[in-house]
Amino acid sequence: MHYKIVFFDVDGTITHHEDGSISSSTKDAIKRLIELGIKVVAATGRPLSMCNELREIGIDTFITANGGYVKHDQHVIHKVPIDKQYIQEVIKFASIQNDGLAFFTEEFNMNGVQNPDISKALKETLSIDDYPQINTQIIDQEVYLTCLYANDETTEKYTRQFPHLSFIRWHPFVSNILQNDVSKSLAIRKVLEYFAIDSSEAIAFGDGENDIDMLELVGLGIAMENGHENLKKVADYITKKSGEDGIEYALKRYQII
Image 1 (cartoon, rainbow, N blue to C red):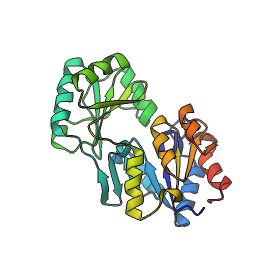
Image 2 (cartoon, helix red, strand yellow):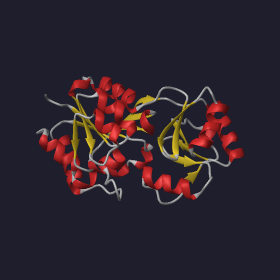
Image 3 (cartoon, rainbow, N blue to C red):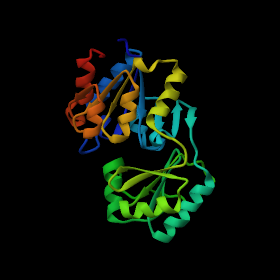
């Protein structure tokens, strides 16, 4: 099979699964793909503002906010903004409960609530050490993803309060708050349509449960050894850990590079 495009999850896939760095072998492998004329897309839960290191490698197409916002160069391919009224209602409720919220525009913003569990989750999911910026004007901007930082018991209060919204847990202390159907696979379909590429001609790498639909959609789905067990079950191949040059290893095994 001649593959024309590769989708990469970022944290725990492109980045080292322990320290968040990007190895030289991974950078070289991605650059080699681009030199061969194979399109490379980052498919991440990050906002676009946190993808600068990936731009430096040569990536110019980004699926961000877990599929809520997709951009190629300066062109927005796909976006799913959340209704401002819903955001306002959730902000008010979270303020009463003193719960942490994150808002994904092209930037990453939070509501100002801080505690050790939130700090730990930010470090584990986005490799963030310092508390992100607080945006008091977030209601005036387009928001493509909102995250709730809370345990199951607290999250249950939100599901009862907001039955018209979906709360999708993807980390022990983080849930996506969704109004519409948003996923990496839906965003990938938009990218494939934009470039006129069939899904059978695509490869995807991932490590988390939120990558399952992505791996199932493409022609070749590759899970990192450090990935979630449920993801490994649907993968066509399990490569080495991200911190052990797993991307380069798999691309060479399949003779892509």
